[in-house]
Structures are given as structure tokens and as C-alpha cells.
Amino acid sequence: MSAGSSRGIPFHCPYCGDQDLRPSEEGPSDGRGAWECRSCLRLFSLKMLGMVTRPTITAPPTPGTEVSS
Image (cartoon, rainbow, N blue to C red):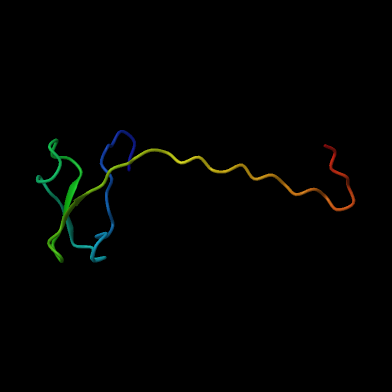
């Protein structure tokens, strides 16, 4: 997505994998984010649900050193 854009652009259909996609006016009530696949004739939309936090990775203790408790 580009800066300021609220619409995700799919590169392929999530159902059949084809790339013949077109924006559609059908779908969500706001008329945005709906895509139609001309190959399998499915209508779908993209929606960002949120951000995922990455787990913190800690380095293992160096061999020969004691771990204090």
C-alpha cells in the first residue's frame, strides 16, 4: 500500500491463484476494498486486522560462563 492509501492491492486471487483481478463496486457497504476475480468469478475483499509484535529473542549464554540467579 502506498502512503495515505487505505486499499490493499492483491497480486493474485486467494482462491484460484489467477492474476486477472479487477476492483469491484460490490462488496463492503463503503464500496472500497472489493475485488473480483475474472477467472473463478469470486468476489472478495482485503482487510488489515492490525500489527503483530515480534517475539524478543535473547542470546544463549556463552559457554564457560555461569548464569547467576
